[in-house]
Amino acid sequence: MKKTTIFWHRRDLRTDDNHGLYEALKNEGSVLPIFIFDTEILDELEDKKDARIEFIHEHLKEIKTFYQKHNSSLLVLHGKPKDVFKKLTEDYDIKSVYTNRDYEPYAQKRDREIYDLLKEKDIEFKGYKDHVVLEKGEVLKDDGDPYVVFTPYSRKWREKFNLDELPNYKIDDLTPNLFTTDSFEMPSLEDLGFEKTDVDFPEIDLSKSTLENYAEDRDIPAVKGTSRLSVHLRFGTISIREAIRRSIKKSDTFVTELIWREFYQMIIYHFPKSATSSFKSKYDKIEWRNNEKEFEAWCEGKTGYPIVDAGMRQLNETGYMHNRVRMIVASFLTKHLLIDWRWGEAYFAQKLLDYELASNVGGWQWASGSGCDAAPYFRIFNPYTQTKKFDPQRKYINKWVPEVDSEDYPEPIVDHKEGRERALATYKSALS
DNA sequence: TGAAATGTTGGGGCG
DNA sequence: ACGCCCCAACATTTC
Image 1 (cartoon, rainbow, N blue to C red):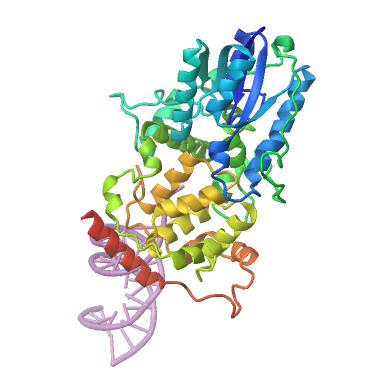
Image 2: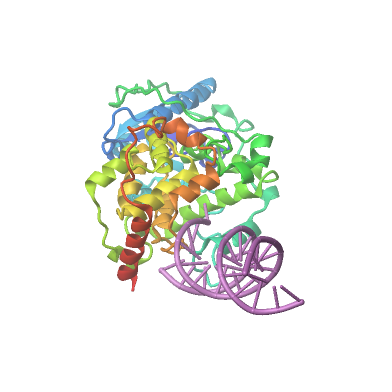
């Protein structure tokens, strides 16, 4: 049997500027690219019309077309990664497995298991930095500890970053016959137990005008002022290096957002427990009200607070919510309604096309006050003030809550002043 | 990557 | 001209 090297695609659904793929082709012959639809993850998804699965599926088709142009194919599998690899080691004489590193707790555990499994059979498992520009261990305090505060982290990140040294892993120069020549059928969406949706996927906008106006426009939800990059970065349909190359000289504010992303990736790697418990443990003492009826009203966009309801309806209808509004609805849920941030986090996980655990947990813990470098708990957003500042014409509100001025629109679920004071009292007693 | 409460200042109306 | 009050505008502090 011919020696084969596997390249395992995960959250890097592209062949262009892909570090692990580049290394596999550079160092090995006969590379077999694979992707696994992981049932450990898929089985957790309640809605069988999940646009994210469709997004992955669509992009796998594109990747496969690319490989086919090189007389190869893409092997798409369905199952538990461990079982899949056991089978692969029986079907192929595998020399090594290449992949790109993933810093989430589940991925870390999965990769450790695969590493152990392969090691028993004397197969190398090699991971590469691809998802971020600077990873764990590269941006540390002078004493070697990871940063837990954003501002000094970002300062160090910018110090370490060098545009001229930013690699572009082009595989066009590498010999294409390094791929295996097998041919595979890809499972359909239905084979995987999912259905087509009618969701539109956002297209990347890194145009000159968008980036130049980014600092000013990004906070206005009625304006199309953001890059729409999130879902593409999450699934790696664009490389982070390419995103930086195209933006770094045009908008500092935008690059700061990309640094926030790396900051949270680093936090989840160093502090995996923060995915499910408060970064600052004393915040776990807060006595959440966790009223299910109120949670339902929040989910459905029926709180009687127009800006909150607009955000939740945008999320429900499109799988996306403007970032400014994400902060407002998160503050409202955790402060005004005193509902556990994990409930909100889980709802976002279910609905957001661009759901990324590290950023989502980071954002929710920031809003609830429990996170590293979070806002102090007494910073409570006033939904009306936020509306005046960021949606003064109420364009965004009118778009998503057309009945806002009619009798059908509900009364506020809680009075702002009372909600604010209740939150202050509850947090204060938990933290004192 | 707040907002509200409280404090300070200074212009203007008025007796 | 003066003191007094009101209050907007701004600054500071508090939550």
